Amino acid sequence: MSAHLNLYEHLANELGALIDSRVFAPGDRLPSIRHLAQQKRISVSTVMQALRLMEDRGQVDARPQSGYFVRHRAPRRPCSADAQHLKEPAFVGINNLLMRVLKENEAPDIVQLGTAWPPDEILPIKRMQRTISAVARREPALLSKVSCYDVSESNFLRQVTRRALDWGKLDPYEIVVTNSCTEAISLCLRAVAKPGDTIAIESATYFVLLQMIESLGMKALEIPTDPKTGPSLDALELALRAGLVQACLFVPNANNPLGCVMPEANKKRLAGLLSEFNIPLVEDDVYGDLCFAPQRPWPVKAYDTSGNVLLCSSFSKAITPASRVGYVLAGRFAQEVALLKTVSSGATSHFFQAVLADFLEGSSYDQQLRKMRRTLVQRIARMSDAVAASFPADCMLSEPQGGFVLWVQMPPQIDALALHGQAIADGVAYMPGQLFSASGKFGNYLRLNCGNPWTPRIEQAIDRLGRLVKDAL
Image 1 (cartoon, rainbow, N blue to C red):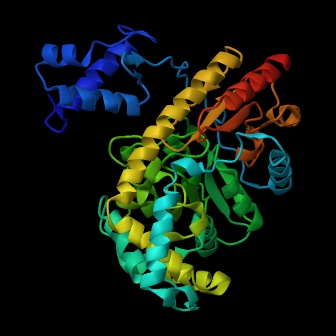
Image 2: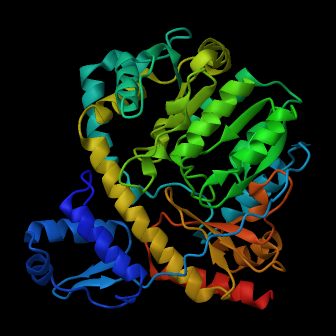
Image 3: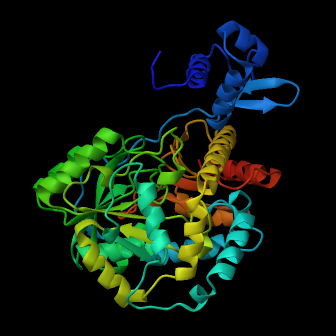
């Protein structure tokens, strides 16, 4: 028995292995709690902990008065990585197409499976209302505080620094507070590269990152990306040795849209490559807190000894998108990023920094993360089941390790962009795969938002979407 695992984790892993090997098939009832306790000679509470962990992992469902049953799960077939070889760096041109798709997705009475925002009902809205009121009463001067130089609220810096202690020692002087993670990434790109420079990106990657590269007049070099382990470091090293890249922009924890998490060994190797070639990495870690592993995965920043990694994040995905507070751990580029921030937008709201600091100071945030992870694992599993049941049998699904989106590979003759217009007319919105590539790859892919609570309306929308895919074959 591994010393670092608890009894309940061992039991959960043991039962999970029996499910994987089909000893317990989908729909089967697991042995009763009392039977497991007697059989394993452990307490009932330990068995309960194990079953709750399995429920969080999406392996079983609890049925009142009946027990625990193995979930009906979709085939977990990872989407194959389309790009096998490096292509030439290219200017990005998705802005016009993206704005058209986003506008179409906002049509009235649409089932919104395109925009990847966390739903209100799993965000701590009521707790935030109380926190906002308390901070306003305690520090009313923050409601009118404006400064072009003093851009950070001290307690917010303290909370960010404390949370970074999980993976390393952080110098508070390298923290730059921003208006959202998006602004943080944009400032970092401007600090480390100039128009015409080439930025290495994952393939596929989040379309907003491509938008930023396009708007800054930079080129993108797509690095072949494994749907489980992230970008190919061998391919990246070849590009670095050829002098093709001036900076990298990666999402190592819960890449959007793949949902993959880069293994720790790969992160360590990546940090070494950045140091060897003196290349900066802008690391988007906004989904790091919403990864599903028992321990939050470390960022690449944890292995950085050269100051080349600029970690960008925010608390918008787990607390409230409306706060628009992000931050950068800017490494050796802290001074440049801070100057760009001051010139671009001045100070970020001191009031909302103080509100978030209050929320982060106690145990509320960790409780919120546990709730969200458990909920999102279950919702991704439910969406995967529905897609597998409604789409053609040869479609492939990602296996997200974090976040709340599902990446679906359809048969090669399907054009996700052409299908999008039919889906909108049928009342369903999604994001076509072409928007996640600088060169327009992934034409037969689509991304679905799994964050919303499951309803008959969503189930019917997936069924309609599946019929459209089948009709297009």
